[in-house]
Image (cartoon, rainbow, N blue to C red; front, side, top):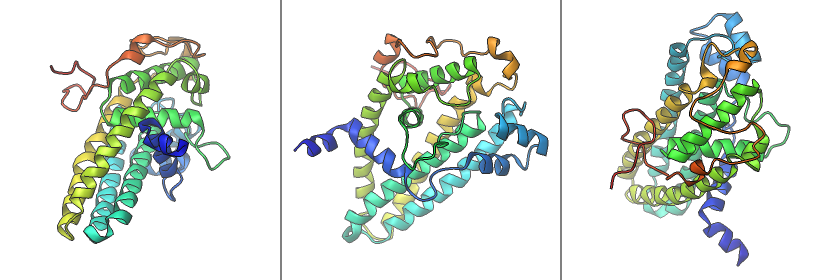
Amino acid sequence: MAKSKVMENPESRFSAVLASAAGLPGVRINREAYLRKALARYCSEEDIRRAVEESPAAAGIPLDVLDRAADDSIGYETAKASALSAAAGIPGFIALPATVPADMAQYFGHMLRIAQKLAYLYSWPDLFSGDGDGVDDATKGVLTLFFGVMFGTQSANAAVGQVASMMSKEVAKKLPQKALTQGVVYPIVKKVAGYLGVQMTKQTFAKTVSKAIPVVGAVVSGGLTFATYRPMARRLKKHLAGLELTNPTHRAADAGHAGHAGHAGHADGEFVDAELVDAELVDVHDSPTGRAEPAST
């Protein structure tokens, strides 16, 4: 009975799927190998070396170069996710119990892949640098917020900006563990996870319907994945690119001047901005700026 209640809880359901997707083969991105490959077409070996050892921002790589590399990765991951989704739609109704869970797993796995790639291009630290096979709480928290940005939630946008501000001020090479697991942004992580659990259930239903007819289901499923995955990836790209953490002027020597305006909070994560916790999970899909705007009434 207790287990059933856990699975019915949207927050717990999303966290379970996130952890499961992170354990799939090929989902975790090697930060060094990825940066070397993604920047090889655009940067010198010295710039790439410094980007790997420190960050692309510390290497002084211009934002337009990072944007081009990000677009390359988004195109690659979108095509791959759409092709796999289409393949999963071929068997039709008789195979739905097997294909829909598998399709959702690979879909979230590809969301994790592009989230990591964009994070590394825009100067976030290695998200899976630990020795264990599991996902630590800080990584789970920041990935939840990244997913929230991809789904267009206001509070996730604000929280990601706040985490980036903490790392900029401290010139940190790792995630602010305490803020993500106890204080400052932890309540927002929980709220966003609950919202995503509900959205995940809606997506599962949509994909089930799309796969009901063989072959036709493949076309619809692949098209549905393409239509949703690419805009979400581009939304995360735009948000990460606009943070202070990505600014090419951000150097270790400039730590005292770094920061992200508009996001208050202490790096130790001992208190939380109530305004962020109470922020609506506003849909920003149609916002021309890519930032959260008041919901229409």
